[in-house]
Every structure is written in C-alpha cells, then in structure tokens.
Image (cartoon, rainbow, N blue to C red; front, side, top):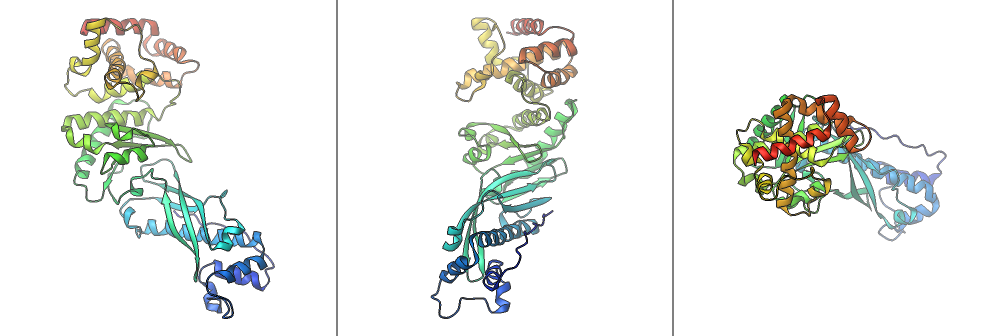
Length: 410
C-alpha cells in the first residue's frame, strides 16, 4: 500500500510564490503559460534562481522538498505496478519511497537547479512480518517541466539493487534469484523441504517462513550481507533491524551451491533456516557454540550421516590431544580464525547437542535453547538455570557428560 504524503500548507503567497509552486509541482504551470521564463530572460535556470530570491529560502526549499517527495512516491507506485523492470514479478505488499525528513535541500542547492538527498525506501514482502527499511541516494535536477528525479542509487542490500530478479513463492518460502536462473525452481523445492523439516522439530514459536536469496555470483554476497568476507561463506543468515522488528534473509553462495550434491544442499538450508527460527528468540546471552551447535544438529538430524563423519575433526583432535576442558568461546568462531579451528569449534557445539539428545531426548534441545535465550544474568547463569529447569541437572554436569561423550566416540 502506498502511503500518501501530507503537504504542509503555504498561506498567502503573492504572485512570484504562486509561479514558484506551479513550476515546482512539475507540470501544472504549463496550463497557465508558465512553461518557460519570460523571453527577456537568458536560457537555463537563472530565472528560477531569481524567483528563489523573491520567494524566500524557507518557502522554496519546502516546495522543492514537496516536489521531490512526489517524484519519489511516483517511483514507488511504478514499482508496485510492475513498471520497474528489475523488480517486476516480486510480490511486494507495499513499496514506498520518500525523502528523508532530516535531509531537505538548502536554498543554495535549489538555486543551482540540482541537489542530492537521502531517500527512505520501505517495502514489505508477503512473508515478512516487518516493514523493511533501506536508504538510497537520490539526485534531482530542475528542467523545463520542474524538478525531476534523475537517479536513485539504492543501498545494495537487496538482490534487485544489483540484477533483475525472479522469485518463486508458496506462502511460507520465498526464493529469489537472478532473472532466468535455471536453479530457481529446484532451490525453491529444497528450501521448502528444509523449512518443513525445521518446523517439524522446532517447538518454540517462530514465524515458520523463510526468504532465501541466490545471487548470480559470490561477489554479491559482500554487499548483500554487509560483510567483507561474505563471498567466502557457504551461506549466511542475515539478521538486520527493520522498522518493526528483525529482517532475516538466508543468502546462498552460488558457486558452493553448484558444487554440492543434493543432500549437502539440504543440510546447509536446514542449518540456515534453524538460525531463522532461533532469531525469533532473544539473541543476547546465548553462546555461539549453542547457536551453531544446535543449527548443525538440526541440519544433520535424520540425514543418515554417522556421528564419526559429522564430528570428524573434533574427534581426531580428541584422539590426538585429549578432551577439551571447556566448550569454545565466541572468539573461536571468528571469520579470521583458521578454517580447521573453526570446524572444531562448530563440531564442539554439535557434539554437546548430540550428547543431550542421546541422554535426555532431542525433544529437550529446543526447550533448553529457549530457556537460555529467555534467561537472565550472565551466560553461565543462563546455562545453569536452563540445565536445572529443562534437564534437571547442572551445566557443570552437562559439561562432564559432553567430555565423556567425546571420549566414548573418539
């Protein structure tokens, strides 16, 4: 739905003010013979600058901002109607573009006949429970028909900012790829299967919807994810703050996707969609080993892949140097760590979840995770409280059981 923008009234305008308003509104003036400056004036926009001097800074900047807003609103309407070719086919529920309230043109820019400003782009997809907000750099120029939007450079956080897109959507899973990408139907099927499998397991409340994005090249993962190393990742679950809540996207690396067999693609999708489910719960206070370990547990659950393969690097390290004294801290998951070390960290969290599933039943894993996420105090206090509340034990005892599990399976 396009939201109409209210105009502030401008009262008691004398003739130059009226002429200024008509020109700024891009077209109305032509019906009244105001299409061009008087013949004695030189060509160009010098006549406009003189009108600015007569009208006053506050009035002309307000009128110019109103004209700019009209141009931006028209762009939003064009997108919804399908006239924007790059976005044609995207099932937007709303798409609104407006001038940032804090970024109005000043009188000097108005006199020059050209100004740049920040635009706010807000849209809603059918699967989003929130309004997505982006920024864009807008350039306006004064021409014979008034102010005109000549350029709108988007933030680069959406795939259509970089390439025309196609989508497939079934009401709970929306998948987006470059227009004409032959992988789109198959990815749509796999993503929906993965979403259902996560939904069957995840007992805590979550929207049970997901948006998956497959860019044409890995280099697009960097601007889409806002990460310098996005293109190095197999997949990324992007979490950002929207105007009404979190905006979550699963970004797939197209090169890695092409190299993976179908089972591996399912595993990656289940892992990332588990992160989507986790993001419905509070995020602070949950250690990374538990977030990633549970996502890995869900991704491999029911796959038929043996534990000895899933935890191969961790179990090899246990055989070589003995069991670790503790679960990994968050820094061990940093992207600047060696990939082998990061794999051991991921597998440590997975092994903890596998141990809990073996000892207590895997129907206890999500309640345990939710209790940690909703808990209070330090991370250690949350882990201890969750262990007592959900599993009837202490976290120290769970750590010992994890170490015993590693010894038994190494």
